Image 1 (tube, rainbow, N blue to C red):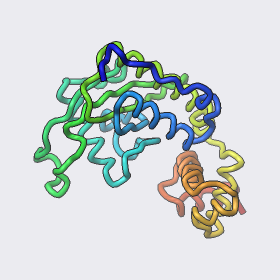
Image 2 (cartoon, one colour; image 1 turned 180 degrees about the horizontal axis):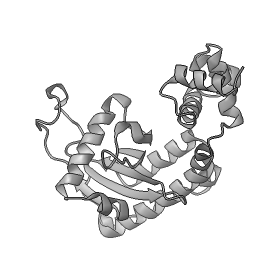
Image 3 (cartoon, rainbow, N blue to C red; image 1 turned 30 degrees about the vertical axis):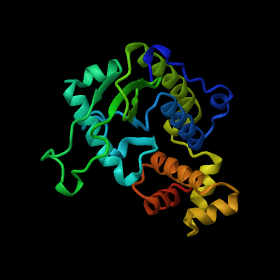
Image 4 (cartoon, one colour; image 1 turned 90 degrees about the vertical axis):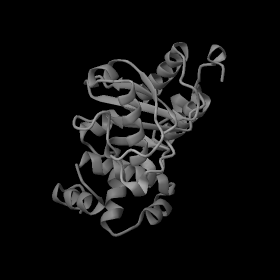
Length: 236
């Protein structure tokens, strides 16, 4: 795509209607494809393994089994542009990976489809100062400065709405009514597919509610989540 002809991505009414993770997944995926990237990841900035680890990823279209490869290729791309933590938290960075074969990575995973991709990392902040980023990746040329400015503006708009609808509630530590329902049915041994039928929602949405509830309760898995909810009297 000719960067001089880059057209900004406008989410329009879809942004105003976004209220759950599925909505924001679709918005970020649409934005990524608009700017000719194949993959995206919204993640919390890690304090221990910059820029972030697989466990810090909040929303992504990268398959779970390939996520560690994506993170590894991103880290190498940022390393190639000699990015320091203070730099990538302040300004967007772009870079490109290198061919596989690095001894740092397990030999059985050395075929990394992200290695030749261009990466663009957009730093983001909540009003409380918590650090996040959206990383785009794809087999395209590195974006120009004007295109980066457009991508950054679009990403910030989506993230601001995501904060209002999702993060602000999560950081309050309170379960929403729907999350409470999902935890309750989980405590009764129902699977995500069964809960989806009961509540009239998609299985993907149910899994999103479970993930959100687990984060709020600081649980490592569903069993731990239910145990904490029972101890706190959130379900009976």
